[in-house]
Image (tube, rainbow, N blue to C red):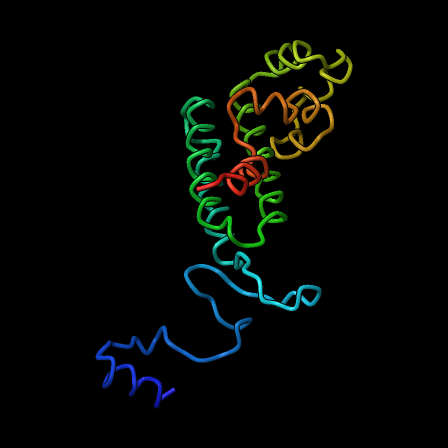
Length: 186
């Protein structure tokens, strides 16, 4: 490392940041927010999203889907779409399909919780579930006094607020946007 640093600083007259610079295997290094792994079938290195970058976007999603943030759900959907678009446009050159599926799952689950909280009263929840096509018996059980997280993972609520309904509401699917972003020709 010393000889490389010396060459860069003396011959090329560039400044080297010794905290960020190092020599190592590609699997040990992160560069511009990307990590690398070796794909044995293709016999080459591929880019992936490191845990730190994924945690960062998950933290943003949690903040935007906070139940105590009292804005309309359509505004939340718009803000989530901005974050997802920006994140995918940056990381789309890497292998992120499984990561976007995980991100989609978290976003939909947390968005269902926001909608559930906006309905507030058990009567309102019951009435809205019946409107969305849930049987009265299942709606009565779901509208009971369970916690938000528990109820929003039930089949009843997931069926009532299906992925298609959330999409109509304005919630962006990260996986679908990734497919569109990769197919675009510049």
